[in-house]
Length: 361
View 1: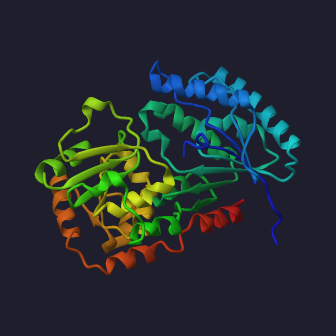
View 2: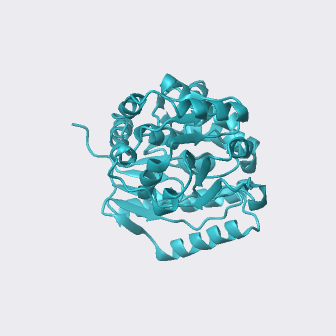
View 3: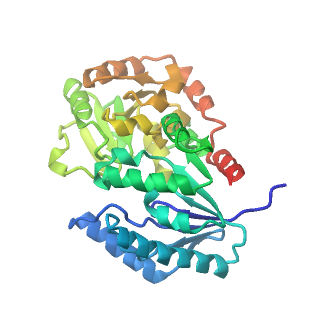
């Protein structure tokens, strides 16, 4: 039997999507925007509260660091502070055989300084494709991180192939899904939310962040070509509101608690993955892909490489006009596809993924 190994992880802020979880360092240079100011203030308040315990086996720590990662001096100061903070947290909570994991390259200097622990890079994004992170800096930091870690875990095949040429031990571990929770979307006993019950059918829906990766022309084209359809956009919006398409049959519902999403999917006749075809999409593995499949719903997606492995269980569209045609095809599909979709991800639970990651650790 493998001995239990504790985990200290640098990740996205806990709650924003047997462990100490270290909230994001904010390595994107902050702007004078209401969103960034609110996030900074939130971090200050979280840091002031100290270590939080949302679960008996989980501790969440928010470090107060300087977010100007373009400066080598700032990165060095932050790394020294974080190394001492990690050592202190580990001693205080009795962590004796812990692994250190990060989901982003900003902590490269920290990992270089901590050679006596197992170091893991959980790579779910190709940061060099994100201009807000300064691609050259992201590449330089990731190069240093790859040289420091013992293993790289990748969530898409494209990331696996890209990092395999840069590190000797790379693992492909795609996202999991709450199979039981999203199966409720296929259960007739699941009540449809009141705000969707009166909408004209069919309901064509999307859930997730309405951000820069979403092709808004696809949404506008669907609504314009088929005004009798209801287009539902469920999730937070990071796009400047005037840039969003506004038509009588487009409904922006905002964000809902994650455990309520299956009830909304229950009302969707077709689910959308309307992404812009940009370099970042090549490396993406959207969590919603498996959520839609676990719900048994028809899916029309942009050409996301990770989606292609599911073959005829979904429809691929290469233009806004093709999205309309493929949605119409979904509306008259073989009903047996519902069970086949659900079966395709039945063994891909988050628990099974956690077990695989535990084996890596």
